[in-house]
Length: 228
Image (cartoon, rainbow, N blue to C red; front, side, top):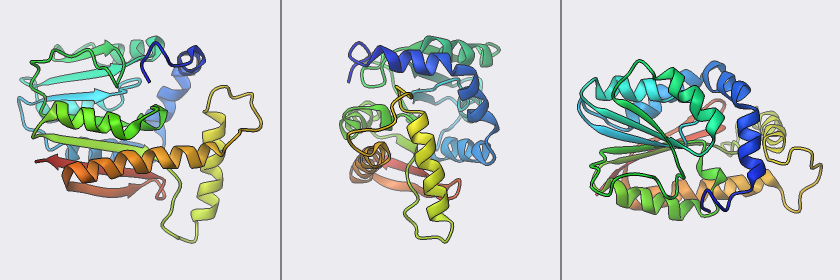
Protein backbone atom coordinates (compact mmCIF):
# COMPACT_ATOMS: atom_id res chain seq x y z
CA UNK A 1 0.00 0.00 0.00
CA UNK A 2 1.43 3.35 -0.99
CA UNK A 3 1.53 6.34 1.32
CA UNK A 4 -1.25 8.04 -0.66
CA UNK A 5 -3.51 4.99 -0.28
CA UNK A 6 -3.10 4.52 3.47
CA UNK A 7 -6.04 5.71 5.58
CA UNK A 8 -5.45 9.26 6.76
CA UNK A 9 -6.47 8.11 10.24
CA UNK A 10 -3.26 6.09 10.48
CA UNK A 11 -1.12 9.18 9.92
CA UNK A 12 -3.25 11.16 12.34
CA UNK A 13 -3.03 8.39 14.93
CA UNK A 14 0.75 8.05 14.89
CA UNK A 15 1.20 11.78 14.64
CA UNK A 16 -1.10 12.45 17.59
CA UNK A 17 0.67 9.90 19.78
CA UNK A 18 4.22 10.74 18.64
CA UNK A 19 5.36 11.80 22.12
CA UNK A 20 4.03 8.64 23.79
CA UNK A 21 5.41 6.45 21.01
CA UNK A 22 8.80 8.10 21.45
CA UNK A 23 8.73 7.41 25.19
CA UNK A 24 7.84 3.75 24.65
CA UNK A 25 10.44 3.40 21.89
CA UNK A 26 13.22 4.55 24.20
CA UNK A 27 12.24 3.65 27.74
CA UNK A 28 10.57 0.23 27.56
CA UNK A 29 12.75 -2.15 29.63
CA UNK A 30 14.94 -4.20 27.31
CA UNK A 31 14.22 -2.16 24.19
CA UNK A 32 17.66 -0.48 24.14
CA UNK A 33 19.30 -3.92 24.09
CA UNK A 34 16.98 -4.95 21.25
CA UNK A 35 17.90 -1.91 19.20
CA UNK A 36 21.60 -2.49 19.76
CA UNK A 37 21.20 -6.12 18.67
CA UNK A 38 19.28 -5.04 15.55
CA UNK A 39 22.06 -2.63 14.60
CA UNK A 40 24.67 -5.34 15.21
CA UNK A 41 22.77 -7.79 12.98
CA UNK A 42 23.17 -5.33 10.09
CA UNK A 43 26.91 -6.21 10.17
CA UNK A 44 27.88 -2.66 9.34
CA UNK A 45 31.41 -1.42 8.80
CA UNK A 46 32.74 2.15 9.08
CA UNK A 47 31.85 4.00 5.91
CA UNK A 48 28.81 1.86 5.05
CA UNK A 49 25.41 3.18 4.02
CA UNK A 50 22.39 1.89 5.94
CA UNK A 51 18.71 2.64 5.39
CA UNK A 52 16.03 2.30 8.05
CA UNK A 53 12.49 1.84 6.76
CA UNK A 54 9.89 3.21 9.15
CA UNK A 55 12.42 4.95 11.39
CA UNK A 56 9.69 6.46 13.59
CA UNK A 57 11.06 8.91 16.14
CA UNK A 58 14.61 7.81 15.35
CA UNK A 59 15.36 5.51 18.27
CA UNK A 60 17.55 3.23 16.11
CA UNK A 61 19.42 5.98 14.27
CA UNK A 62 22.13 6.66 16.91
CA UNK A 63 22.97 2.95 17.05
CA UNK A 64 23.26 2.79 13.27
CA UNK A 65 25.37 5.94 13.17
CA UNK A 66 27.67 4.51 15.82
CA UNK A 67 28.19 1.43 13.60
CA UNK A 68 28.97 3.29 10.34
CA UNK A 69 30.99 6.04 11.98
CA UNK A 70 31.29 9.66 10.85
CA UNK A 71 32.37 8.57 7.36
CA UNK A 72 29.26 6.42 6.80
CA UNK A 73 25.68 7.38 5.90
CA UNK A 74 22.43 6.69 7.73
CA UNK A 75 19.07 7.32 6.04
CA UNK A 76 15.82 7.09 8.00
CA UNK A 77 12.48 6.99 6.16
CA UNK A 78 8.99 7.39 7.63
CA UNK A 79 5.64 8.75 6.43
CA UNK A 80 4.40 10.55 9.56
CA UNK A 81 5.36 14.22 9.90
CA UNK A 82 5.23 14.76 13.70
CA UNK A 83 7.14 11.52 14.26
CA UNK A 84 9.86 12.58 11.81
CA UNK A 85 10.26 15.94 13.53
CA UNK A 86 11.29 14.11 16.68
CA UNK A 87 13.73 11.99 14.69
CA UNK A 88 15.26 15.11 13.12
CA UNK A 89 15.71 16.71 16.54
CA UNK A 90 17.40 13.56 17.83
CA UNK A 91 20.01 13.41 15.05
CA UNK A 92 20.45 17.14 14.44
CA UNK A 93 24.04 16.93 15.64
CA UNK A 94 25.05 14.42 12.97
CA UNK A 95 25.73 15.64 9.44
CA UNK A 96 25.72 12.09 8.03
CA UNK A 97 22.28 11.05 9.34
CA UNK A 98 19.41 12.02 7.05
CA UNK A 99 15.71 11.75 7.87
CA UNK A 100 13.35 11.70 4.89
CA UNK A 101 9.58 11.63 4.64
CA UNK A 102 8.46 8.84 2.35
CA UNK A 103 6.83 5.45 1.91
CA UNK A 104 8.72 2.33 3.00
CA UNK A 105 7.33 0.48 -0.02
CA UNK A 106 8.42 3.24 -2.41
CA UNK A 107 11.43 4.76 -0.70
CA UNK A 108 12.63 8.13 -2.03
CA UNK A 109 16.15 6.91 -2.75
CA UNK A 110 18.44 7.50 -5.68
CA UNK A 111 18.51 4.37 -7.83
CA UNK A 112 22.29 4.64 -7.87
CA UNK A 113 22.51 4.68 -4.05
CA UNK A 114 24.77 1.87 -2.86
CA UNK A 115 23.00 0.44 0.20
CA UNK A 116 24.99 -1.94 2.39
CA UNK A 117 22.22 -2.79 4.86
CA UNK A 118 18.54 -2.16 5.51
CA UNK A 119 16.77 -2.26 8.85
CA UNK A 120 13.02 -2.29 9.45
CA UNK A 121 11.67 -2.46 13.01
CA UNK A 122 7.97 -2.67 13.86
CA UNK A 123 6.90 -1.66 10.35
CA UNK A 124 5.98 -4.71 8.22
CA UNK A 125 2.81 -5.27 10.24
CA UNK A 126 1.45 -2.01 8.80
CA UNK A 127 2.04 -3.05 5.18
CA UNK A 128 -0.57 -4.68 2.95
CA UNK A 129 2.03 -6.95 1.30
CA UNK A 130 4.88 -7.43 3.78
CA UNK A 131 6.53 -10.29 1.88
CA UNK A 132 6.52 -8.20 -1.30
CA UNK A 133 8.11 -5.30 0.57
CA UNK A 134 10.85 -7.60 1.86
CA UNK A 135 11.51 -8.75 -1.72
CA UNK A 136 11.87 -5.13 -2.82
CA UNK A 137 14.20 -4.34 0.09
CA UNK A 138 16.36 -7.37 -0.67
CA UNK A 139 16.60 -6.31 -4.32
CA UNK A 140 17.61 -2.83 -3.20
CA UNK A 141 20.40 -4.08 -0.95
CA UNK A 142 21.79 -6.64 -3.38
CA UNK A 143 24.52 -8.55 -1.56
CA UNK A 144 24.31 -6.77 1.80
CA UNK A 145 22.21 -7.41 4.90
CA UNK A 146 18.51 -6.98 5.70
CA UNK A 147 17.27 -7.05 9.30
CA UNK A 148 13.69 -7.20 10.57
CA UNK A 149 12.44 -6.80 14.13
CA UNK A 150 8.72 -7.09 14.80
CA UNK A 151 6.28 -7.86 17.57
CA UNK A 152 4.02 -10.91 17.35
CA UNK A 153 2.50 -13.37 19.79
CA UNK A 154 4.89 -15.55 21.77
CA UNK A 155 4.62 -19.04 20.27
CA UNK A 156 7.44 -20.58 22.28
CA UNK A 157 5.28 -22.38 24.86
CA UNK A 158 6.86 -20.83 27.97
CA UNK A 159 4.76 -20.79 31.14
CA UNK A 160 4.36 -17.02 30.95
CA UNK A 161 3.31 -17.00 27.28
CA UNK A 162 -0.48 -16.86 27.88
CA UNK A 163 -0.21 -13.78 30.11
CA UNK A 164 2.25 -12.09 27.75
CA UNK A 165 0.02 -12.81 24.75
CA UNK A 166 -3.06 -11.43 26.51
CA UNK A 167 -1.22 -8.20 27.26
CA UNK A 168 0.12 -8.10 23.71
CA UNK A 169 -3.36 -8.47 22.23
CA UNK A 170 -4.61 -5.55 24.33
CA UNK A 171 -1.74 -3.40 23.08
CA UNK A 172 -2.43 -4.36 19.45
CA UNK A 173 -6.11 -3.49 19.75
CA UNK A 174 -5.36 -0.15 21.40
CA UNK A 175 -2.75 0.73 18.79
CA UNK A 176 -4.80 -0.26 15.72
CA UNK A 177 -6.58 2.80 14.34
CA UNK A 178 -9.37 3.57 14.80
CA UNK A 179 -8.92 2.77 18.48
CA UNK A 180 -12.60 3.41 19.22
CA UNK A 181 -13.61 0.15 17.58
CA UNK A 182 -14.53 -2.54 20.12
CA UNK A 183 -15.00 -5.42 17.68
CA UNK A 184 -13.17 -6.35 14.50
CA UNK A 185 -14.24 -8.59 11.64
CA UNK A 186 -11.12 -10.63 12.26
CA UNK A 187 -8.61 -10.86 15.09
CA UNK A 188 -6.13 -7.97 14.66
CA UNK A 189 -3.50 -9.95 16.56
CA UNK A 190 -3.85 -12.94 14.25
CA UNK A 191 -3.71 -10.63 11.23
CA UNK A 192 -0.53 -9.07 12.57
CA UNK A 193 1.03 -12.49 13.27
CA UNK A 194 0.35 -13.57 9.68
CA UNK A 195 2.07 -10.47 8.30
CA UNK A 196 5.10 -10.94 10.55
CA UNK A 197 5.35 -14.62 9.62
CA UNK A 198 5.17 -13.74 5.91
CA UNK A 199 7.84 -11.04 6.11
CA UNK A 200 10.32 -12.97 8.24
CA UNK A 201 9.71 -16.14 6.25
CA UNK A 202 10.47 -14.34 2.99
CA UNK A 203 13.70 -12.91 4.42
CA UNK A 204 14.80 -16.41 5.43
CA UNK A 205 14.10 -17.62 1.89
CA UNK A 206 16.14 -14.81 0.35
CA UNK A 207 19.15 -14.87 2.68
CA UNK A 208 21.58 -16.76 4.86
CA UNK A 209 20.64 -16.21 8.48
CA UNK A 210 22.94 -14.09 10.60
CA UNK A 211 20.45 -13.57 13.45
CA UNK A 212 17.36 -15.43 14.63
CA UNK A 213 16.45 -14.17 18.07
CA UNK A 214 13.53 -13.52 20.43
CA UNK A 215 13.37 -10.55 22.80
CA UNK A 216 11.03 -8.96 25.36
CA UNK A 217 9.49 -12.18 26.71
CA UNK A 218 9.46 -13.76 23.26
CA UNK A 219 7.14 -11.14 21.76
CA UNK A 220 9.73 -9.48 19.50
CA UNK A 221 11.27 -11.50 16.68
CA UNK A 222 14.61 -10.39 15.27
CA UNK A 223 15.67 -11.89 11.94
CA UNK A 224 18.82 -10.81 10.14
CA UNK A 225 19.93 -12.14 6.79
CA UNK A 226 22.97 -11.86 4.51
CA UNK A 227 21.85 -11.77 0.91
CA UNK A 228 23.50 -13.99 -1.68
